[in-house]
Structures are given as structure tokens and as C-alpha cells.
Image 1 (cartoon, rainbow, N blue to C red):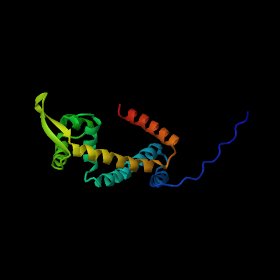
Image 2 (tube, helix red, strand yellow):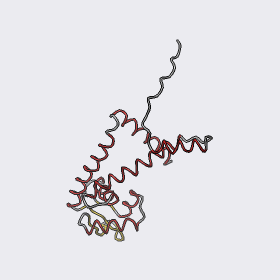
Image 3 (cartoon, helix red, strand yellow):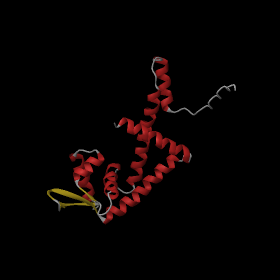
Image 4 (cartoon, rainbow, N blue to C red):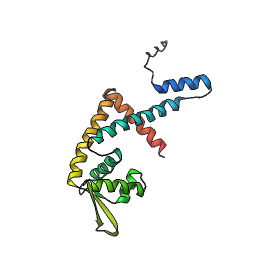
Amino acid sequence: MTERPAEPRPAQRQDPVDAIVDQWATVRPDLDTAAMEVFGRVSRLARAMGDRMEKAYAAYRISRGEFDVLATLRRSGEPYALSPRQLSATLMLTTGGMTGRLDKLEQAGLLSRSPDPHDRRGLRVTLTEQGLRLVDEAVGAGLAVQTEALSALDGERAAQLAGLLRELLLATER
């Protein structure tokens, strides 16, 4: 059985990362830029989607970081309460950074802080009814933005991309 020559790849649209890789190929042809092609795109995609998500949440008068706090409380299940330490660990924030977010969200009536009944030195951060309603609306708006962006891929390719990114994330977080 003879092998057929590989069909040439159809011409693809060029993105800014292609231009960067081409420039490196010109000045440093000895470099293997395959990793740059992946991580440059991941970085640019994260930035672009972050900006879109920020706009989606701005309609609810919250930032992405504030959404993350509310969403973490919502995902924790009833009674939608966690300690500031648990929130900081989940969101990878310093306690100082967390305090600022909690202050703003508490002033807006979206969460409350109270003494922890199980730890005299601790606090519990609890989602209010207003916060619950807001985060449930905001998560839908955020998912709509993400779904629209992902519609550039069919379902099978989107699932394949999710799987590949999962593998890469697990490998880099070891």
C-alpha cells in the first residue's frame, strides 16, 4: 500500500501571534517557537475574554474580582457562607485584597459578615438575598459572553480544546 502525500493545509487567517513568531523566525531561526504559539494565544485570549467579562459584569455594577467572590459563595451551596480565609484560598488572594472586595460588596448589600459560631476568632461571609439574585443573573450574562466566543468552534472541537487545556493545566500545576 503506497502512502499518499499529505494534503497541504488550507491557508489560515493570520493572527498577531503569527506575526510575532514570524519575526522571531527571521531574527532567530534557531528557536523553536511552538510553545510561544500556544501560550501567546492563551494569554491574548485570556486578556480579551477578561475584558469582555468585565463589561458583562459592569452591567451589574460589579467587577470580575467581585463576581468571583459572589460566585464562590454561591457555588459553596446553602447557606452560601465561607470564612474570609476559605475565600482567599479559593480565589488565590491575599487577605488584604480580600478585605477590600468584601468591604465593597458588604456596602452594596450583596454579602454580610458575622462572627463564626464555631470559631470565636473567625468570621463568616454570607451571600445576602440581593447578592444571590445578582450573582445568578451575572453568571448567566457571563456564560452568554463565553458561549458566544466559543461558537467559533463546533461542539466537538470545543470539547477537544477543553480537554487539551485541562491536560496542560494539570501538567503545569504539578
